[in-house]
Length: 492
Image 1 (cartoon, helix red, strand yellow):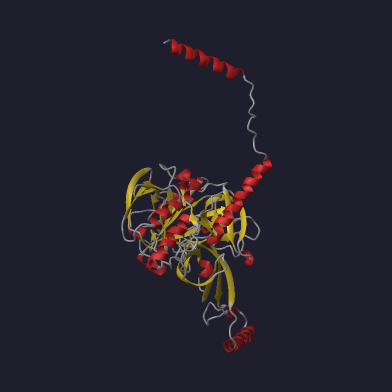
Image 2 (cartoon, helix red, strand yellow):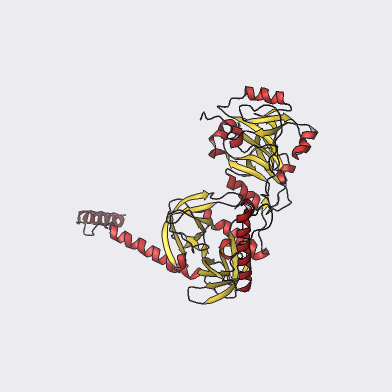
């Protein structure tokens, strides 16, 4: 016991002595701004050195397209006076004969790509390699290989090409769903034939839709201000860790600082199918959709839903037309998985097995229901040209700017539509509310603000009761299917 006390006394003495000693160790200084800049500089250099070996320069050769005018109603020469038409036809014929006698000059183009397989699989853009007769790939070490197209997917602008090589450096792919707006973004490619150019910026936005669905169905672009120019197409957009977050695809104007990349999650999904099957088969419902939270007008009108995807229209040729789904329905889940945006719904349906039913959780008229739909394969001819509008006499134009008529079997036959309950639009005033919403002669109005209309009188009564300042909803059936439009008088 005495020994323990002595030890305790010695320990206390030691602690006291240490406490009285002056502090001799200097406080750790914060790094200077210059040191931090050097660290960031080294990080960018390391990313470029790490990723560049997996980036390739893609050179393509294709024949130029000779303008040809067929002798039909679309021939622009038909619009000219006879004398001028004969003059240009003569010159065109002479040009054709000359081109037939002389070999055509080949057109060369260049893009970029990123290696995703040690055995020679390379990810790039469809528009880089589509309709080409020769493709060559040059690696960072200078080796050149002839490449062949493994598959292309127009709806995502993704393509996979293959070279005969082994043990290639492979890029590391990120999880683009975790990419955050504001983080560094580095583009590597061959803009203007300046091979292996490295530019950096930031992720400016996610989930961008740039083009019409008529051009590309799958659009979920990452927007970046990293400089992207012609030749960067197909090359990688990477993060500060050297992981590919997207495939650079397009720009909005030259030197605007607005470029777009296909998220690597989508690109990888498509690429895997192209490698395995040579094509990407996507599921399709045949609906026109909009994110509810992005449209205040819809949010004000649709009750019982604060989030989800609004069914704007239903294509008459699509699988949704065979289901109980209706325009103005709000889809909130697919097979139990919540969907909040139009892209969420596209992503879920795209990977569903064609022909296998899916269950949609839907908000309709404030209540929740389930609707079963069987996705079909996405048709490449989805956007066939519309038939020309017809007109006929009917009820005088109203404040919506449309003329309507009782829908009889004869009227339905005249306009080439199926006989359903409703009233027929026979004329639409230019510049009217209806014209601005794309309503045309031949459309059938079945409901006004969810109120069924089967005669001109019912239609007139419903319109009188409607408040155009708040907006009136018309349910329509047209040649492209069922849809709804909101007509609102802005006071302009």
